Image 1 (cartoon, helix red, strand yellow):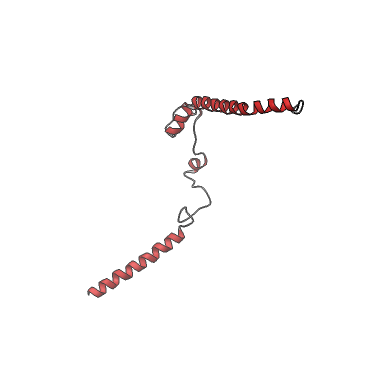
Image 2: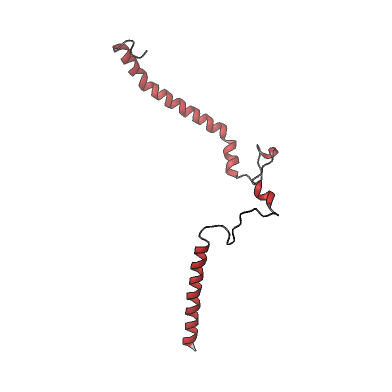
Length: 114
């Protein structure tokens, strides 16, 4: 009897492995096991108009907004100021290099840059 039960367990496990392999292949395309081309009639509005955010909640906190989005929105003016000052630093640095070169060219080749 022990050999028979061992054989049954081994056979059941091999069948189970085969079924798992088949289901992996069947579901490898993602989605449902029974895909459909139409929207469900009971959830038609849910599927068509999601996510929907009423205008009154657009500029304020809302239950379905990600908190990081609200955090970034609150800090946008500060980030814009940082970006403007970085642009100013890069612009001044470039002028610090190019202005003496332009003056050198203008002194040695008058009218070349105009």
